[in-house]
Length: 471
Image 1: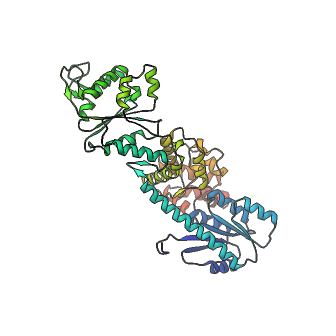
Image 2: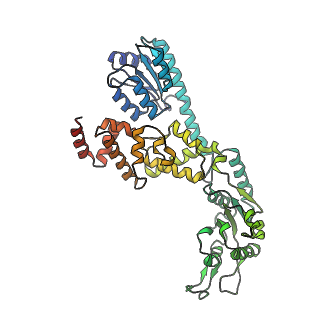
């Protein structure tokens, strides 16, 4: 890949000595590397929050903030940033402390420019590899999506192969899996790959139908067959003629209806409620359940003959906990989806946010992950999702105190604009009106904060707060 097509990397130098900034900028210049400088540590942090440099060189002793404080703030924001501390006051204790806090290196002044160039070159090369890795992940996602199903682990590959083998031939199918695993996506994939893909795909959630209306919903009725039947009505079997009927949560279907469903599957004929005549239908039926139907059969809650009719071919959808190798792909897929939906620039997750997601047990499976990332994408104030953007049950003991307090006191309801406005107000209250501090709490640059203040008509209140705080 040529330099012209490779996204530029960036390096930030923070030093209160202007001559050092000039010397280091000149010494480290190379094609494809943008070098930024800041003589004030707070301005340097603003650049970190706004520009996301991959590498930061910072002096240790500076006015207002020390290099160690700058390091801590950067690690809170994005632990993947490579930070090198420079000092003329070297001590073993401070070097150990810096490394413990996340520094990549700790260099003694006067610095050997040749050694520094070599060290930075290695970090740049590593950053290039990570860039390429992210590009490959994007390509991998494109190659790992099958009919809306995202996954490349062994259990998912096996499931996809089953779908491909079965789709051209099935007449009835059973899909088993816990709630939130994506049984509906498997059903849609089976239909779209079947010979009747041009026909209708009709869905009935059996857990949402009143028991007395099951037969009317499935088989239809004629006028006057029961109170309220003012017209003839075709059932879902007739509606799905020439296509597929998906019966979700079939374990909740009443036993009486199960018997009539079995006859329809055997004869491909339906009889409307109140009618004496039979109507031929040509329908493929896919049933799904989150129950153990074998147990239900043993307990006389599900008909054994219907179970064996449906389960001639059974596909089991794995729990997310069984395929955690697919988490990075699913994260990228959902973040891209919500970034587009919310019209926000979101480039991914911080490393610690990824670790937090990988440690969760995911009882709600893929649907829970989708909800978590949808919430996080809405709450994120920067272009990177961090732990503080997660729902409260995932962000406990999660990071910077200020951000946690802001998020915890913010209702998890409302539109994206309302949430953003509330977060800005909370940040300003926490920072006593200091815009620079509020921007750091929100993990955005000061220019971005000023834009959002104007966008939400908060400028007047901020001016009053600033004058009261004496800023």
